[in-house]
Amino acid sequence: MKRINMLGACIIASVSLLAGCGSSGTLKDEMKKSAIANPWGETQSLTVAIESSEVDFIPPKGDKVTAAGISLPLKTYRYMQGIIEALYSKGDAELRIRKSSEMEGQELSGDYNAYPEEWNENIGGIEVHLRGDKGKAFEATYKEKNGNYAILFRNGEKGEGMSVDELESLRK
View 1 (cartoon, helix red, strand yellow):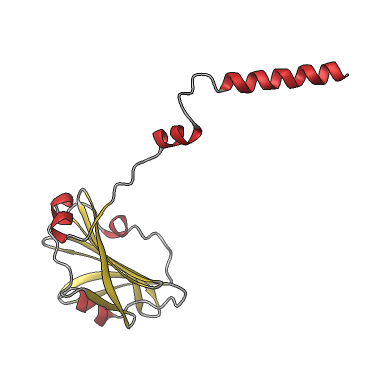
View 2 (cartoon, one colour):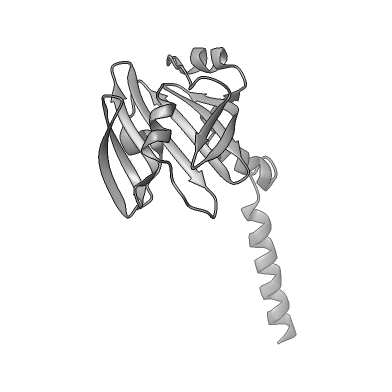
């Protein structure tokens, strides 16, 4: 019986060794080869983000915005071909303003969450599609002549969204 168990163990060890043949590196190396590259670049320079994304973008004036009564400083610009983003954050609160020459709506926002409310609002003469709760928005998407926009807001555990007035101030 011991010989059969020993024979079985030898067969399993041999198969395990053979399975590794032809591998040119470690598991970590193999994972790197099969990983998908992050398409987003990041910079503190608006000029670099515009040049890299090939999208003209004018962020809100100043280096801070207000959402749900929270003053959020600009942290960075992110970009990929055809999309540019300004990221503002403080603690758990985060606001992203994206612009694209190609994508629009949820595709641009990347927010596929279900919200209790969806509605349209005329903000500064532009029809804006909003998604949120209790009349406060977590996502706003709209089109202008010069491109498509998405504004995303996350407020950590508080969960309170942006008011229409706050959204309007971001468009000025």
